[in-house]
Image 1 (spheres, rainbow, N blue to C red):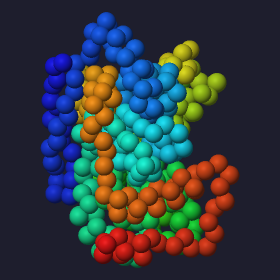
Image 2: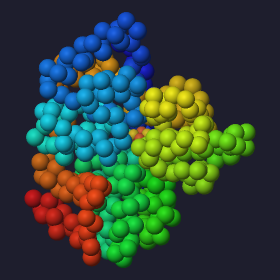
Image 3: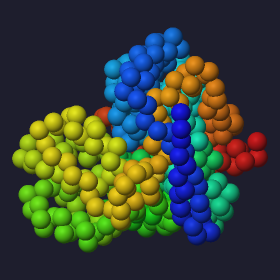
Length: 370
Ligand code: SF4
């Protein structure tokens, strides 16, 4: 199986840093058929369930659904993995998704087709620097996006996804709390704008969504006046300003169900188009413009780390059962609190906490000393 390495520049506290993604070539149609048949058997043998993000290869998405797993956003992936009775969770996505599954289900074996699949938001927010940022602003409630390491989550009062960030921060703002936000600056900017919260943001960005271009999108809108524009909030403010709808991947999927609209311009990773076209085969979905086109790269609207997930490495991990996702148990205990807080908050019909929601600072002190 031949692979190609892709160099990826991303923002971190020192400026620009470089990481790598290793993407395998597509298997032949015949090999693909063999792999898909084998994988169904291997998942059953291991009592494993496959949980896939909307951005991974369509074959993995289809396999997840065919075998009783799930294709969704990171919030629902986390919830599903925790509730599912399988003893092994196989997470097709990027590292923080596997770690979140392990944090919520420490008793389960968690495997990933590619454990080295990173995320520029996670890479750009190292634990030590983030702890120093929090230490400098002790009066703020710490809200972190799910696209972060276990060490960063362990410092948070709340973990949120793009699906619930606005609701959680609005809830905290209504209680008079000031927010320290990390790591995505565009999502932080959007959340502050929507809620009016006093929000101090880390300056990270997603290498995919940061590339959508407002001027080209405005041109496209002019050419297609009947199209509706759906945008993920990790995109720059100038792009969000042109949107008819701003929301998470799951929100975008729901918004595309509007029976009055036939054509949508979509600004999110183009892995999402598989589920959109599967769900709405009679509608037209067009990629929002980025800086470039071509193979998986920084500017082609496809995450190079999501692209590392494939049938071959899924088969290898199910065969060997290693490496498992492992996290220090003390870190799991601390990082689970803000994630469970999010899951409880977003549960349908869940009662909302009234009065000031306590900080998790006491638990943090215990964790650091222990
Ligand atoms: S698309 Fe962006 S936010 Fe999602 S995993 Fe890739 S780099 Fe991270």
